[in-house]
Length: 397
Image 1 (cartoon, rainbow, N blue to C red):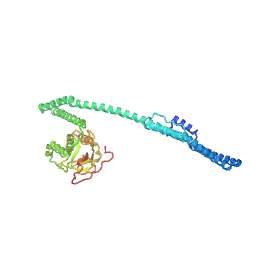
Image 2 (tube, helix red, strand yellow):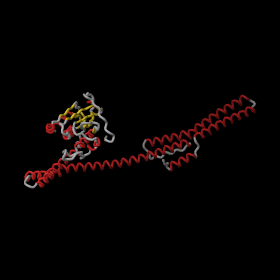
Image 3 (cartoon, helix red, strand yellow):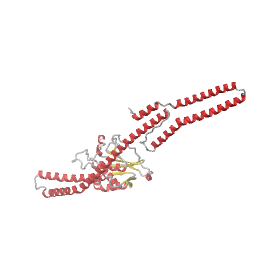
């Protein structure tokens, strides 16, 4: 329910006691009619009593003309004073408010219609002022949160520095000495001692991997460089070279089609392909891995399809797989820190794209992701075009 400002209510009440413009015009018309009748009556009397009829008639016509001229003049001045000037003042005050002076109160004296209109304009001004105040308060809160976020990011950078320097050194020492202990005393103690040493070595190794992955995750988007033209084929080639040993060990085959230029950063794009390839090799099951990479134009993006013949992912985990440190399998079954796909999503979203799981794909895993298409590369024709099903609304972020 809307509320009316008391000042506005008083102005409207005062306006209700004023004559409306229609009554002012009506009174003016009645005055003109009365004057005309009076002139006619006076003229008839003058004609009846006059000896020189033509002279009397001329006098009557002259009197009527002068009277009509005076009446029209008075009506014009009256209407100008009663209606046109108040409207001019109202327009001037409305322009003043429109120019940004929202504190200026709009008040005009005049006919009821004009004062009512002024009251409505003033009510609108007050509402705009209220909304402006609310917007300024919201902006102030937003600015405070932005400042807090900047401070938090600064603390995160400080944490990354501590993790990369202050924590790494003692961790390296722990890992080094536990491995040395394992080599020197393996088999010289009882089986339980060997098991404990193995636990310590494995824990130090996993902690190092976690810290390194977390550092890499925190650095995404902090290079300060703008995305530029990057060859996705070069990024994939580098990723395959980094994983050459695993590819050879697993007997994997990698099939690719046209690999276009995209707007990205080469090191980060290499990380995207390397994470996806690594997962395909790791979760291949008992079959030799087969990875198929296709690209299709979906202006203004390139749409990448990355499929494998591995163990697959259940649709219910379509979102969980992108959450940092979330794992779907036991650590002793599949190694890793659970950060690969979350980092992949962060990189792709940093480039302005998105990534999602194709929940309709069977016989393995298929991921779709998009990367911005540079304007100058929107022409190549691709072989074997495909259509990617859209992710569910609750998956799309």
